Image 1: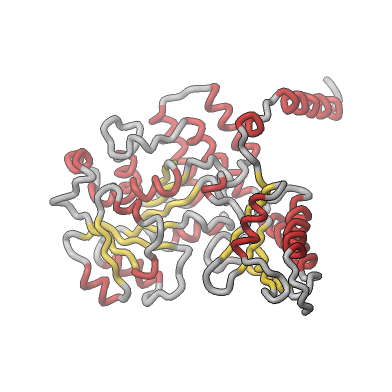
Image 2: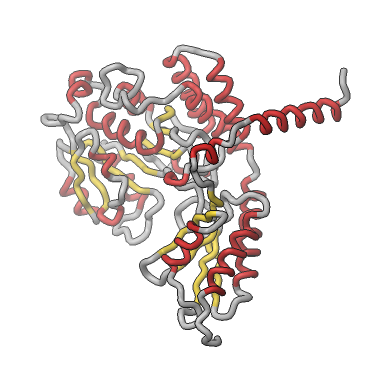
Length: 395
């Protein structure tokens, strides 16, 4: 048997050889890569997948099984890992919302499943808290649901009728609510109305999945390509066995289902399962400390500039990913947040950051997706742009 060092050396050489022959597709296509100092946003391609996920997806590409068998087995495994009654892999969190809403309206009735998005004559109203209306609530309406805005317990009781199919809750926006989440869930139980929770962007921590499931929501969805570091186009739908089964009836590979177009490939089924397994084994505190040290290091460099202030923060209800808020004295630097963001994007290398143009014009820098050495590049470029727009006014 070859010595371990020799085996590892051969493995490294093989990896280097593969890298050497892999075409630079982005360069060939004229697509400009970028440094990600904003986070795993959908428009930026999500997060980098776990190596274990890539291996699992390669396996599923080379080895075939019946889709329903794989769907069943993966769902059982993910349910076991997360503490849910049932689970399925969806085409992203948005796909999960569409299929989950369809499930609550049709309840497995094949005639109704055939008719959607025509929902006339069936329960098709979904209660949503007015302060939780957001850009993705259109996905609730996609299979034919009608949104009914509510704010208080009295509103909810008044709105509930035989037309009510579902209640909806957005987990990452708990502020400014006029009803507590536990009371909201209790009302759903009282009236026997399923409650769908969008928790897509609340991982890490991965442990939050189990606690959210245990809170009493009937369905919960997660994005696969963000905190879980699974396939970008996949997601999870967790919850009651009957509702998950109804959701599957409305999706692929069922030939005439409304969600037929929301396909999930075999490699995505397996990849999502391994993403959950790997995420649960990963030391999130170590990763959090890495990110915190990185953003704090960027902050220490930037506050060397006169008139620049930096504050470290952690999202209230989003994924636990630290970031720094950067602001500067406009009397010293003649550059807006929007201008600096665009200058970073247009520069070499291109850098993507989060900029809040409303309220107090903040620049946010995260380290979630930064690779070794990239934090220094981001800091240097921000410094260069600010210095190039100095007005001559002293602090």
